[in-house]
Image 1: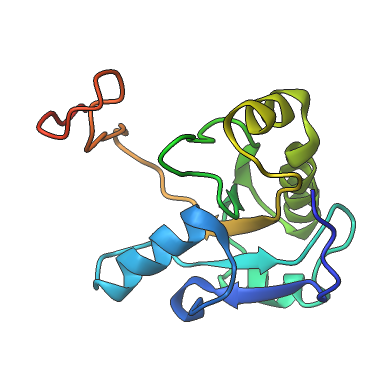
Image 2: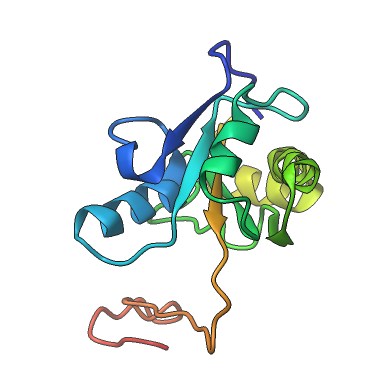
Length: 162
């Protein structure tokens, strides 16, 4: 993981702009800009394990202290040649500031896990990975799934796989 010299900070998903926040955060920000319903949340930037933003509790309280999902959003994690889905940690059902700090630290530390490092070394030319972390109000889903707009096996663009 790259240790940033910038101070750890927090940015709302609504105000992400050009902040280097990784694919997951950028995708959520795009959905918001299109007017789609996205659970509220924020992105932790330039952090590392045990080096979190001072105002983390304020941002969490501004969401109403909900149960949240804590998700990785590494810079450059998804490309034409690599998809890092499942390589980094995601924590669900996180509630309270102590659990939130712990979950963010776990997510940040997952950049260094053996599985993610091996995948990075095989699929990319990255020396280091810069990790942002999405903290988002968790929604209790009735159902869930994945939609591939390109067939992941044949790479055909005329097939959609659900």
